[in-house]
Each structure stands twice: as C-alpha cells, then as structure tokens.
Image 1 (tube, rainbow, N blue to C red):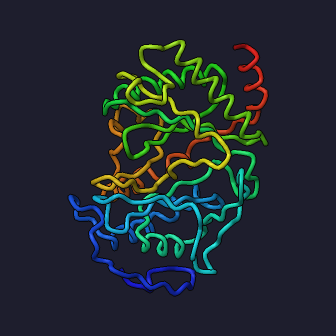
Image 2: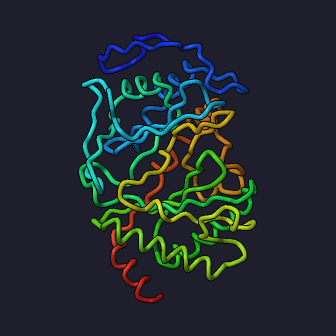
Length: 300
C-alpha cells in the first residue's frame, strides 16, 4: 500500500500496514485499507451524506473494539456534521471521498454504520429496515422469514431491497422517497413486525431478550429511530474471513446466496465484476408510501 494510492490530493500517512487485524485469516490493515479504496465507488454511493458511526479495533478483532460516534480529533479536511440529540448535539463523520476511507481504515476502522437519513434531511429517513436475526446460526430460517415478509410487502405494493448483514442475518429495506418522519416509520415498522409475529408465531419474534426467543428469528424494528444506524452496504464486518454486508437480489436468496457471511474481502470483487451493484439495476421506488402506511395502520 503506497501513500500515493490515496486520491483527491490529501496527504495521508498510513502506518503499521503489516498489522494483522484478522488473526485466523491473516488479513492485515494494508488489505483493509486497500479493500475500502477499491470498493469506494460502490461503498460511497450508499455512505455519502450520512452521519457515520465507526467500529474500530486497534489491536485486531481478537480483542474488544469500540464504537466511535463523536468525530473527535479528525483532520479539518474530513467532513463532519453536528446533529441535535436529546440532551446535546453530537458531531459525526460524513464520508465523501476515498481519502476519508483510507484515513479511517488507518485508524483500524473495520465496520462503518450509517444513519437512515441524509444529513440534508436529517429528520426524514430515506430507508426503513427490518433486521432479521436468527437466534441460532440457521440461515434457512432467515430465508423463510424474509420470503414471508416479502409476500406482505408485495400485497401492500411496497418495493423492497435485500442485503446480507455479513454476520448471521438479513436486512429487508424499504426505500422512502417522501418526507415521512422517523416516528411514523418507527410505528409502521413496529406494527408490521407485530402483525407478522401474530401471523407466524412459531417462526418470528420481537422479544428483545435472546434467552426468551427460543429458536425463532428476531425481527428488529427498533433501529428505525432518529440517531440510530445500520451497517452500510459493502462495509466489512469484524468477523474472521472479513465478511462483507452485501446487496443481493430476491432471486439469489436461498439459491446462490446461502449464508449471510458468504461474500468476503477476498471474494466480493469477483461478484462485483460479474454482477456489478445489483441494487443499481433494481428500480425500487415507493412514491405513495405515506398513503400505504396510513391504510395499513388503519386496518390493524
């Protein structure tokens, strides 16, 4: 990894490039930086103009890392934004270029989480997420639950996207084009999850406690709130093999995609070369979502 590989004229000193961040896989910091520089055209498309939370591992993923929300001690050329919170404001990193990724990866940032709204319309999410998390590691259960959720959303004429989390589960995402508040989206997600759990009580749960979920798939709707976030598309995860949170199609689910951690730092570029960014090929507009939400809520 050479310093002149970092783009846009920013002079960044990259340090300790041979540090192993993924012990079992032997993946180094240099490889992580190079990954983010190479995937930047895809990654930045979804990360730009969002408040970003960093998941950093100074000594590698075998040791406990930490979550960084506050954009403390960042260089002046790295864009940040100050956002209002309940008790105080908080300054977040906002990604815009390759140099940002190189700098933050050099700080041992492995995972990037992004807000569900753009900083220009911070109180209006442009995405709703249902996070499907199996209590065990049975991805087949997640597939079945995702398919049942799609049936409901198809009945509501709501178009959705799909992403592996790179860990154990799946994100079902509803793109939002209208200005709808977080409160409305959160209530919609909550009521949808409740509806699904009542219809499929043996397969799905919204119980927070892992010990009380049994062998059901947990539908996490609560992240659809102001100030919360989700792992960004094409972000690495802090797990051995360095899996990647990857956009996929519904046609792939259960066929070519049989694991949430299927795509990794070492394999994702073969997929991108062959398939490109599959979300870019998918027309997924929901221009009348506000009306649909109102009708669904009134029918409960």
